[in-house]
Length: 234
Image (cartoon, rainbow, N blue to C red; front, side, top):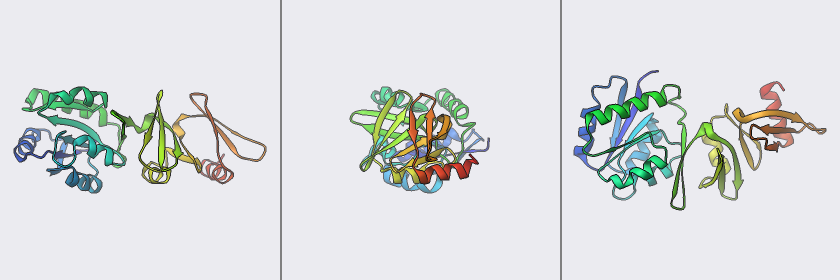
């Protein structure tokens, strides 16, 4: 595993400087940049594609949670804030870790260990999560857990584990951001995660039916059936 690129996102300059100083001993972490608000952070993340962000929760204009909601894909996140009432919410989101200011070096050390463990097998060019806000509930969804995406008007419905949530993206928008080696659009309304395919069966007209590991089945259109066959020498 190469160096892990990170951003520091915090509205307080001194907090950003302290974090940079604290992270200097970690030779496998590479500082990519910093932002004082969510709008700057979004621009940096879209251009630099960090593996990891150290993210303050309470910032003027847009919170850290709102920043994550605006992103197509979310890297690993370690929340950093002075307000520990956000801790429960952060861990419900499956955030990598949560550091309360002032941050103790030994506590940071444990967080960095988690970073190494989680990211050692992931690709820096394909961020591994989606962040979805549904009412007052937040979801931090690993793409590997996402087995089906359905079009619901201008929204997408995401299926993962035993849950399903609405996402504020159209299926076409979402498709452009997904790894084509992992996700395949079987018809105009449905994308499946190919790693969940248990069985592929052609019908009398040549259309393919995909049975997933949860025993749910979905049928591809004629065009997409032909495309899947050509790609997979089926």
